[in-house]
Length: 155
Image (tube, rainbow, N blue to C red; front, side):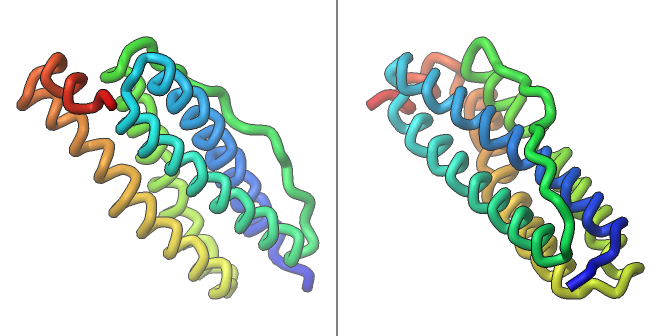
Protein backbone atom coordinates (compact mmCIF):
# COMPACT_ATOMS: atom_id res chain seq x y z
CA UNK A 1 0.00 0.00 0.00
CA UNK A 2 1.65 3.20 -1.16
CA UNK A 3 1.84 5.70 1.68
CA UNK A 4 2.58 9.37 1.92
CA UNK A 5 6.28 10.12 1.44
CA UNK A 6 5.99 12.76 4.16
CA UNK A 7 4.74 10.13 6.60
CA UNK A 8 7.46 7.67 5.54
CA UNK A 9 10.11 10.35 6.06
CA UNK A 10 8.66 11.14 9.47
CA UNK A 11 8.66 7.46 10.42
CA UNK A 12 12.29 7.17 9.36
CA UNK A 13 13.17 10.16 11.55
CA UNK A 14 11.33 8.54 14.46
CA UNK A 15 13.08 5.25 13.73
CA UNK A 16 16.49 6.95 13.98
CA UNK A 17 15.52 8.29 17.41
CA UNK A 18 14.30 4.89 18.62
CA UNK A 19 17.45 3.16 17.40
CA UNK A 20 19.57 5.74 19.19
CA UNK A 21 17.52 5.35 22.38
CA UNK A 22 17.84 1.57 22.15
CA UNK A 23 21.61 1.73 21.75
CA UNK A 24 22.02 4.30 24.49
CA UNK A 25 19.86 2.29 26.90
CA UNK A 26 21.89 -0.80 26.01
CA UNK A 27 25.19 0.88 26.85
CA UNK A 28 23.84 2.54 29.99
CA UNK A 29 22.29 -0.71 31.23
CA UNK A 30 25.60 -2.52 30.85
CA UNK A 31 27.38 0.29 32.69
CA UNK A 32 24.87 0.03 35.56
CA UNK A 33 25.39 -3.73 35.68
CA UNK A 34 29.17 -3.34 35.72
CA UNK A 35 28.92 -0.82 38.57
CA UNK A 36 26.65 -3.13 40.62
CA UNK A 37 23.42 -1.11 40.26
CA UNK A 38 21.21 -4.11 39.51
CA UNK A 39 17.88 -2.27 39.89
CA UNK A 40 18.92 0.38 37.40
CA UNK A 41 20.32 -2.30 35.08
CA UNK A 42 17.04 -4.23 35.15
CA UNK A 43 14.89 -1.17 34.45
CA UNK A 44 17.06 0.31 31.72
CA UNK A 45 17.55 -3.08 30.07
CA UNK A 46 13.74 -3.35 29.99
CA UNK A 47 13.57 0.11 28.38
CA UNK A 48 16.02 -1.09 25.74
CA UNK A 49 13.54 -3.83 24.89
CA UNK A 50 10.71 -1.30 24.62
CA UNK A 51 12.76 0.84 22.23
CA UNK A 52 13.57 -2.23 20.15
CA UNK A 53 9.84 -2.97 19.87
CA UNK A 54 9.08 0.63 18.93
CA UNK A 55 11.75 0.37 16.21
CA UNK A 56 10.23 -2.88 14.95
CA UNK A 57 6.81 -1.24 14.73
CA UNK A 58 8.21 1.68 12.73
CA UNK A 59 10.07 -0.66 10.38
CA UNK A 60 6.92 -2.71 9.79
CA UNK A 61 4.85 0.39 9.10
CA UNK A 62 7.45 1.89 6.74
CA UNK A 63 7.57 -1.37 4.79
CA UNK A 64 3.76 -1.54 4.64
CA UNK A 65 3.72 1.99 3.22
CA UNK A 66 6.24 0.81 0.58
CA UNK A 67 9.10 2.84 2.03
CA UNK A 68 12.65 1.83 2.88
CA UNK A 69 13.63 1.89 6.55
CA UNK A 70 16.75 3.91 7.21
CA UNK A 71 18.60 2.03 9.93
CA UNK A 72 20.98 4.81 10.95
CA UNK A 73 20.58 5.89 14.57
CA UNK A 74 21.12 9.43 15.77
CA UNK A 75 24.30 10.19 17.72
CA UNK A 76 24.44 8.77 21.24
CA UNK A 77 24.93 10.77 24.42
CA UNK A 78 26.65 8.43 26.88
CA UNK A 79 26.73 9.60 30.48
CA UNK A 80 29.72 9.26 32.76
CA UNK A 81 27.86 8.77 36.05
CA UNK A 82 24.34 7.83 37.13
CA UNK A 83 22.83 11.34 37.13
CA UNK A 84 24.28 12.23 33.73
CA UNK A 85 23.10 8.91 32.31
CA UNK A 86 19.55 9.41 33.61
CA UNK A 87 19.54 12.98 32.29
CA UNK A 88 20.81 11.92 28.85
CA UNK A 89 18.10 9.26 28.68
CA UNK A 90 15.43 11.76 29.72
CA UNK A 91 16.62 14.17 27.04
CA UNK A 92 16.11 11.43 24.45
CA UNK A 93 12.61 10.67 25.68
CA UNK A 94 11.62 14.33 25.60
CA UNK A 95 12.95 14.68 22.06
CA UNK A 96 11.11 11.52 20.99
CA UNK A 97 7.94 12.86 22.64
CA UNK A 98 8.16 16.12 20.69
CA UNK A 99 8.83 14.27 17.41
CA UNK A 100 5.89 11.92 18.03
CA UNK A 101 3.60 14.90 18.55
CA UNK A 102 4.78 16.45 15.28
CA UNK A 103 4.25 13.10 13.57
CA UNK A 104 0.70 12.83 14.91
CA UNK A 105 -0.14 16.24 13.43
CA UNK A 106 1.43 15.25 10.11
CA UNK A 107 -0.53 11.99 10.00
CA UNK A 108 -3.76 13.92 10.54
CA UNK A 109 -2.84 16.28 7.69
CA UNK A 110 -2.04 13.31 5.43
CA UNK A 111 -5.18 11.37 6.49
CA UNK A 112 -3.09 8.41 7.72
CA UNK A 113 -5.02 7.51 10.84
CA UNK A 114 -3.50 4.05 11.25
CA UNK A 115 0.00 5.50 11.53
CA UNK A 116 -1.43 8.22 13.78
CA UNK A 117 -2.78 5.53 16.13
CA UNK A 118 0.65 3.89 16.29
CA UNK A 119 2.28 7.22 17.16
CA UNK A 120 -0.33 8.00 19.82
CA UNK A 121 0.29 4.60 21.45
CA UNK A 122 4.04 5.21 21.47
CA UNK A 123 3.53 8.73 22.82
CA UNK A 124 1.58 7.31 25.75
CA UNK A 125 4.40 4.86 26.49
CA UNK A 126 7.04 7.58 26.14
CA UNK A 127 5.27 10.08 28.41
CA UNK A 128 3.70 7.85 31.05
CA UNK A 129 6.38 5.21 31.36
CA UNK A 130 9.82 6.15 30.09
CA UNK A 131 10.04 9.92 30.64
CA UNK A 132 8.00 9.88 33.85
CA UNK A 133 10.19 7.18 35.43
CA UNK A 134 13.38 9.04 34.51
CA UNK A 135 11.99 12.27 35.96
CA UNK A 136 11.16 10.37 39.16
CA UNK A 137 14.71 9.06 39.45
CA UNK A 138 16.25 12.50 39.02
CA UNK A 139 13.84 13.90 41.62
CA UNK A 140 14.75 11.08 44.02
CA UNK A 141 18.43 11.92 43.63
CA UNK A 142 17.65 15.55 44.49
CA UNK A 143 15.53 14.59 47.49
CA UNK A 144 17.53 11.64 48.88
CA UNK A 145 21.00 12.65 47.84
CA UNK A 146 23.07 10.75 45.33
CA UNK A 147 24.70 8.34 47.79
CA UNK A 148 21.36 7.22 49.29
CA UNK A 149 19.88 6.83 45.81
CA UNK A 150 22.83 4.74 44.63
CA UNK A 151 22.66 2.57 47.72
CA UNK A 152 18.98 1.89 47.05
CA UNK A 153 19.80 1.00 43.42
CA UNK A 154 22.36 -1.70 44.25
CA UNK A 155 21.53 -5.39 44.27
